[in-house]
Length: 193
Image 1 (spheres, helix red, strand yellow):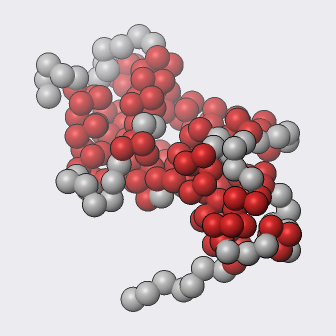
Image 2 (image 1 turned 120 degrees about the horizontal axis):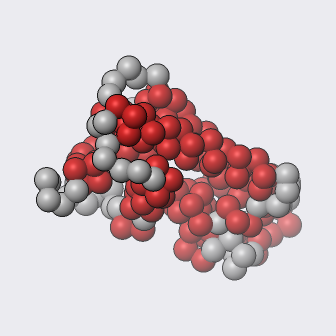
């Protein structure tokens, strides 16, 4: 079953996302985007408001995908270790679904202007706070032997968020296998792995 053809706006977003990931948001011009699309630069503005408009759509679409995946995990009535394993798997699935968009989301959000930047920061804080709560629950139950949930979550996300740099859909591991491997490594450590 083939998917519906992309609208011009979706084509613009897809090509811009690829350019933003490879060149960076600041270094990508509207002329670059038009050239890649094979259209005149001026005609882009009949489809989009600005380059930042595209960045906002990419960043907030990814944020919504992360939150939707994580909301499914939050509702699970399982021990903290299993919940964190499910959260890692959900995070990996979102990252691997569209690596270029993940790269833009993780690296180019700094170019958002207000009020979008504050909204993005709030969404990111809430996501990270939900992960910290899982770790706090695991500490309280005695399941986790750590004392600093903020450090744990920063380490976890730092490990996971590089995935878009090396993940290849045709690679030897599927997203589920990567999630399983990383969750075991991050939750059990090297000695128990």
